[in-house]
Length: 173
Image (cartoon, rainbow, N blue to C red; front, side, top):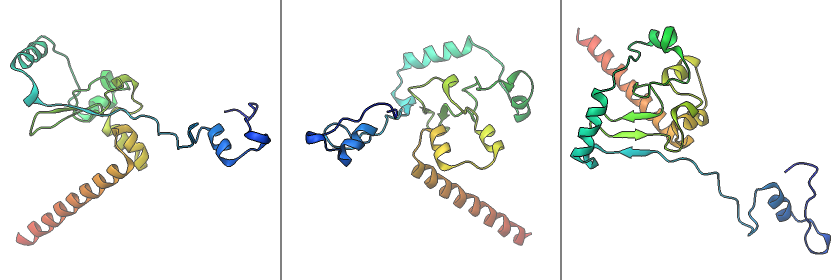
């Protein structure tokens, strides 16, 4: 709503707080809060649910398609692989896909967007920039701020356990 648009008034010319909120888009005409904008949901493709025919067809497509992809971080920073957004969604650091090594399932983080539409595509690029907010990370990973915080606490606990185990190993020597 721009400042030039007139605000509709209620009966007898009264401007109520509800009418102002509705004019600003905070309320729907029924008086309830406007729903948040829809977020694209992630979608998981389970290997268990794929038919044998689908798996054979996927293997044939992979065999017929060979391409170079970066093997080291230095490859991503310089040379032919330095293009951004990164086109190599098969890279384990790409934010578009996640592959579970244990089950083989593929999680598409952004079912409603294409890889070239993402603002950030590489987790290593994000790490090189330094500190970022939980909201930014949640936007890149298609997660809520609270879920990102939970993952951060879990990862820090794992790192703490690894460092404690290393200290115990030093004592054993």
